[in-house]
Length: 366
Image (cartoon, rainbow, N blue to C red; front, side, top):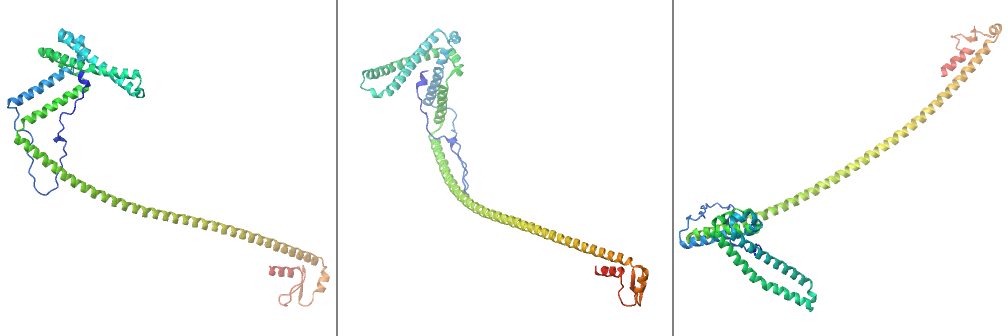
């Protein structure tokens, strides 16, 4: 729990070879394959390197045990019989000290926040008392932290004396916090890097440095080529966009012109249709007028014909009423007597007299 309030900085800031983007070099020259970066040795040979790795392994083991103390305190009833009374007592004392430290830190944070909110009352006595109280609480933190360190060392000594209890405690890894697990992972990563560093000879280190420099140089050169190609591509894209925009403008102009032509043709067709309908209506009215006039003329001619027929019938009736003797006396040379009166013979050259001659004249006239 004490480790939760400590900030751990990154342990190694060197370049990660696996994250370097390797790119094919565009060159016609044949390149030799890079040398392998793995060390030629697989085991440590010197005592100094073995001691270094032993110290680091022991540190990782102790950190794994310390980060599980808070979980032991929360489940003390289930682990009390397995870990032993002395270990559980030391763990409880350690947890109490950590909780006291956390309470002091929380109290200081609240008081400092209150102090920031009351910055306008520096001259007030209660403000000075508050500042003095905060300073007093801060002065109590270093001794408390020292007690936590001593308590941690005491718990570790008890656990290391009892390997079975330490192994049992390591099984409870699920109770470790995420921050503590991240810290342990960083230590394991540091161990791998340090182990590889200790296995690498000075000559291999120089080769590795040279390899990294070559890769970096190639990467920089390839990146320059990529930047050049990207600039050319951007220029081509701009030219293409300009041409497309120009063609789109021409197409839009053609569409507008076509729309105007269609609109003009529609208007012309509509106007022609209206004029044709108007002319058709005028012709229809004129034909109706001519038909009416012709019908009137027909009626007039029929009336005249009827009147002439009636006159002819009246004359014929009048001639029929003349006696036979007077009709014979009245007929001159070259005439013959008929039932309707006297008339010239066909060879005489004179028109007949009576209703029949009048009827023939009327029929010839019509």
